Length: 477
Ligand SMILES: [Zn+2]
Image (tube, rainbow, N blue to C red; front, side):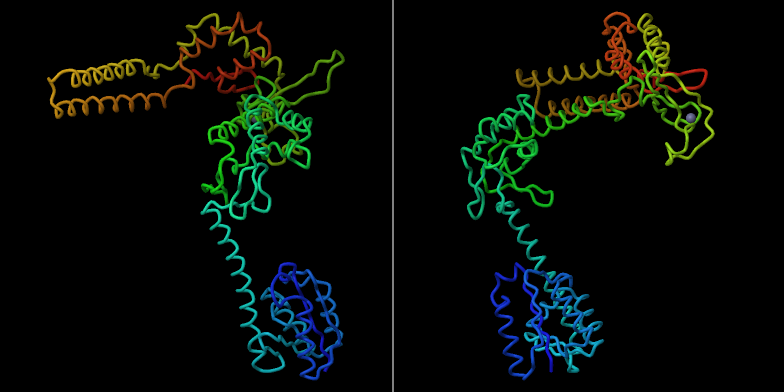
C-alpha cells in the first residue's frame, strides 16, 4: 500500500496547538507504521489557507493521484484537505474516487475505503464548512462587541496621538498637541499641504515618517479623536478620551467640504453648478428641450475663440451615443451674441423696474399682509402674558384659554404663509429690485465675473429658438 500524506498549515493555524507541520507529520507517520503502510511522499503546504485548492503541494498530490502513483491519501484532519465543502467533495469524488484512491482522515477516523466512510463524506464536509462560518461569525461578533463597549477598534494601528493599552487608548500628550495644532491651523485657514510642509520643516516630531497631504487629511477626518469609535458606519461612544472636541471636529468637516468645492471651481471644472460661461446650463432648445452644450473652435488669428451653443440632438452621433437622435431643427448660436442679448435684457430691466411688476403674474399673492397679521397676534400674546404676570385680573384658566386661542391663530397664519410661499417665484419683486440696484452702473459695463453672478441670480432658464430667445426670469412663476 503506497500512501501520500498531505499536510497543510496556515499562518494562523501555526499558533494553535497540534497543528504544526512537525506534529501532523509525527501522527501520520505513526499511523502508517501501525497499519504497515509505506509512505510514498509527504506533500506539505506550509503557510496556505484551506479556502481554495490553489496550493503547490496540493496540485502535486492531485497530479500524482491522476497518474495512479498512490493508493491512499492520508491527512491528519479533514479541514487540512480543504475548508470548503465544494472543494472537499470535488477532491474526494472527482479526483480520489475516480482513480480508486482511498482517502483517510485520522482525526475523524474517516476512511473512504469503507461503506461508512463513503456515506460520511457529505456530512463531514458540511461540518467543515459550518465550522468555518462559525469562526467568521465569532470574529464579527467580537468586533461588534468591542465597538458597543467603546473599546479600541484600530488597536493594531492606533491613530497618531493615541497609545493602545490592551483595552482602549491612552493619550500621548505630546503627539496629541500636534493633532490639536493641525485642527487649529486648518480652521484658521492654513491649507492641508501647508500644514504638512510646516510640520516636516520642524522635523516631523513624534513621527518616523514625513507628514503628507494624505496623513494630515486623514487626521482631520478621524472620528477617534472625538472620543468615539466607528464600526460598520455606526458611531459608538468610546472609552478613550477625546483629543478634539465635537464642535471643532464638526466645524472642520464643514470646512473640508467648502474648500473642496472651491478647489473644483478654481480648476475651471466643467460641472454645471460651476460652469465657466454665464449661460452654460441655462440654455434649453426650444424644439426638443435638450440642454444646449458649448462647442469651442480653434482660436482665430487674433487669438479670440469662436464658441457656440448647440442642441446636442443636432450633433454627430459619435459625440452623444447615449442620446436618441431626433431631427431637431435647432441652429447653432454664437455664445457671445447670446450673452450680449441677455445682458441687454437685464439692462432694460435696470432702467425700467416697472417692467418687473408687469411681467409678474397677477396670481402672485403677497405674504406681507399675513406677516403683519402675525405680528399683531404675537404682540397680543406678549400683552396677555404681561397682564397675567403683573396683575391679578386673570385666573390661570382664562389665561390658558386666551393663550391657546392666540397660539392656534398664530399657527393658522403660519400655515397660510407657508402655502403661499410654495406658489412664490424664486425671487420676490423686492429681491429682484435689490439685485438690480446693487449693480454698480449699467450691467453692460460690468466685468464678466459680475455679469456671470447677476445672470445666474436673475434667470431660471433661457429657451433658445432659431429666431427668438425667451428668458424665464427667477421672479416669474
Ligand atoms: Zn433641439
